[in-house]
Image 1: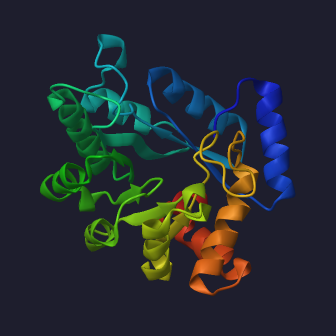
Image 2 (image 1 turned 120 degrees about the vertical axis):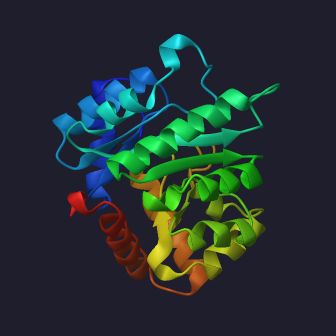
Image 3 (image 1 turned 90 degrees about the vertical axis):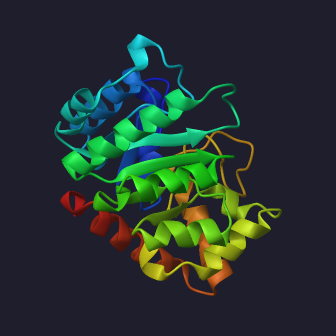
Length: 248
């Protein structure tokens, strides 16, 4: 969830409440947003925070965290996850060993704090999953955020205890591979999200996304799985609280 100012944030929160969205996770992508997510969570009872540095953020000193620094951030009140972290070979080019080093720091911090990882992966699924498996990420658990990969990748994530989070992309007509995954996922491993302000689901595709629109993701998933929207809402809510027990 991203808002440009306090007024925009309050509008988003009001819309979320009007659409029965009870809990939200604000996810950091850089040092500044780590502070923002923690502050936002502190000021709103139903918002929680995740801290981390996105793989596409340049590896400059101001955007570099040690394991110790990241664990200190993660141990703040209402921080329930580590990330957004992972690998992205689409937007970044050249020698990306720094991405893998950053990713490893996040995995280690998650293991030390026992807080789940929020994983981003784009055009790097094999390396992402290899690192999660090899570095023992199952000790912390986590989410493959905004999942866009195939069933084989989903199965690897499930095998190490991770959850699969579906965004508005699952409502797009051409997202056939992802829709197949949505049909196959075990009910106790599905999460739904908005990735606000991006990837607004049908019928708001192309517009700025907001937490209230998660209901349309639930509708799309329910239709694919031949279940009711209430069933999807109840199951994904239960899954969220199981992964993040302090939010219950």
